[in-house]
Image (cartoon, rainbow, N blue to C red):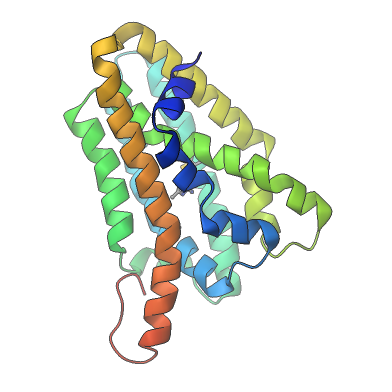
Length: 233
Ligand SMILES: Cc1ncc(C[n+]2csc(CCO)c2C)c(N)n1
């Protein structure tokens, strides 16, 4: 059993609250309101900037060139992934500069700084366990949503789904599962497993909160159309 499979089994409720969130179900059947998706995507751009930093931190925390290359590859994947955000946001009249200038929502701050702190205060295994729900979860979600895309080529979220269902992302997730096993061989003890499960469970819950944030920003906007500017507007 891979370390990832053990972590997922140990934190299954938190994992499911993330990969089976209402946001994913509504995306699957195409009923996710566009305003919710938009709010999510703007924050996700800001999230990716911080995750680029987390991968830079992974290079700093690496002791071998192999570990460095893995973080470097991940950084490249993130830079590519941001093109999707730029492309989709352009259609709503938002430039990359607009995206970068958007205020971070508290859910974005909570998740990204939590991961960065796992890496700053822990070792490379702690950091990669904190990063695992992000990489592996999105690949699992992409695969789950792929049939909806095949059934409807005009699916409103086709670009997003095909990005995460793509071979590139599926391979990145497999590489991440294998890398966790290699890191664990060096430093995972049974005593450490509970602490790593706590990190994995927390990151999964923060992913679930990230989906929820899309609805919260859209609600805040609806309730204060011209008034108080909500966080992450
Ligand atoms: C909230 C949130 N969680 C996960 C991802 C997906 N993701 C982020 S970085 C990366 C590749 C790193 O190797 C992947 C797959 C996202 N976009 N937004």
